[in-house]
Structure formats: structure tokens, C-alpha cells
Image 1: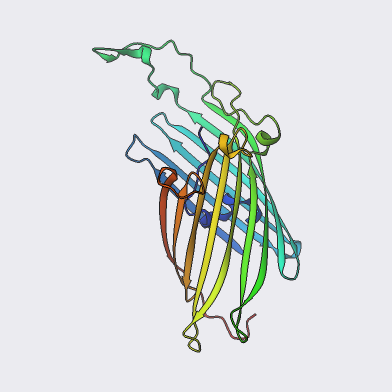
Image 2: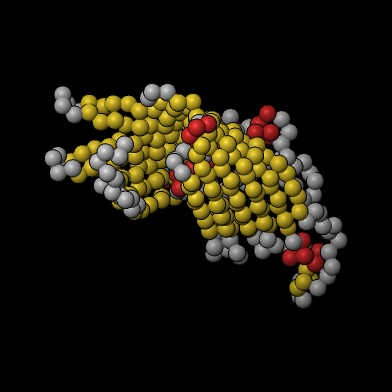
Length: 296
């Protein structure tokens, strides 16, 4: 029942959420995300990902490179991957379609000498015997493919006869470990048992709603509700028999610089105590050079 690493701040690294986001912004984008959990246990679980992406507007394309590394347990199990990403945009006047693919080369390593098996233990003297367990592979390598699509569109909302607001929305879906969804996926077992990486399907969406208060003074407030639903397992299209995760919340952006937000995470969209995983609070600040009035 293990699953892929899950990031609470899922929009802090968009390409990990969906490869169709690759090259979304102008210029070169660099991002790094780290996660450390269960640190009260021995060594716990750590996960790092670093992404570089850039946009080629003359080709309506985006290109990206991503590196990830995860480490868990005392042995430990170390999982690393290097990915290449590509996205293509089909533009129109008020909406865009983004299509993205990702290829990943994965490696998992395990130090068997750090493991202790039950036949090594004496009730009095502890670990004094040798084990009859035959170690498996120390490392395994496999290839992986993912696909994603995102639709982004603008719409106008009128509040009265004189004022209207442009909202920007998106909805997307990504399929990770595609081979496992449509056939036999790669074997990630150190013992060669044919244990495949289960497919993961992610549905996500959100909108950006600009508001204005203290009219005439130019005080701006932006609301951005977002959600994510993931299902991973041998049959991710059947959430009842898969691991599921739902995240939903809202970001508030003040003066286009200060950001705060609250996200709710649960094992199912129904917000009841037995499903709740966590609440995530975020805060941020961005500094941008003052644009010229005639700079479009």
C-alpha cells in the first residue's frame, strides 16, 4: 500500500503535479522542494526534488529537467530519479490547452548489511548469529513514463453595470506510471517478485479571482481556491480499492505581493475526522520590479 511522495504545497512544484505545466512561465524557472516526515521514528522519511524548466514561445513548447531523491528507514532504502519533461501548448483567444509528457530513469538501492532478521537474535545475548536469508539485489533500475493535460481559460464576471473582473481558471489531469495502468509496469522489487509501481491518477484545478476594495485607492485582493484529488493503486480508476488523497483550500494574495493560504488534506473528499490527515498553512512574499505604465 505504499504510494508516491505527496507534497502538501503541491503548487510550489507544478511539474511534479503535472508535466503539462512545464515551461508555463516566461524565462528560466528553478524550484526546489523538500519534505521530512515521521522524524520521531529512526531516520524517518526525507524527500527532495529540484526542477529546472524553460519556455520556448516560438515553438509553443516548454522543456524541463527534474531530479528527485528519497530516503527511508535504517538500511536505508534510497530512491533516486532523473526526468526529462516536454509540454506543448495549443493557444486560442481566451483559453489554452497544455499537453505534457515525462520520461524518468529511476534507481532504488538497499544496504542489506544494515538489516537484522529474526534468526540472528538470541533471547539473552541479542544479535549474535548469522542469518540464512539470501540477500536480494542491492540496486534496481527501471524506466517510467507519465502524461498530463491542462486546460486554462479566462472568463469575465460582472459585479454591476460599471465593473467586471477577469478570472483565470484551470483544470488538469495527469497519469503517472502509465505502463502499470495499461499493462505490466516496471518491477521495483529487490527480490524480483514482479511487484510493479502502481499507477497514480491526479485530478486538480483552481481559479484566480481578482477583487478590488477601497475603490479609487487601488487596493487589490486576489482569491485563489484550489483542489487536488489523487488515486494510486493496481486499479486507480476504482478509488474504493486504491489509496486516495484529497486536498482543498484557498490562497489569499494581497497587493500582488503577500500570500497566505490554508489547505485541508484528507483521505476522502468528505471532511470528517476519521478521514482527516492534516491542515497546511502557507505564507509568502514576492518582490517584483515596478513595471512601466506602457509595458504590456
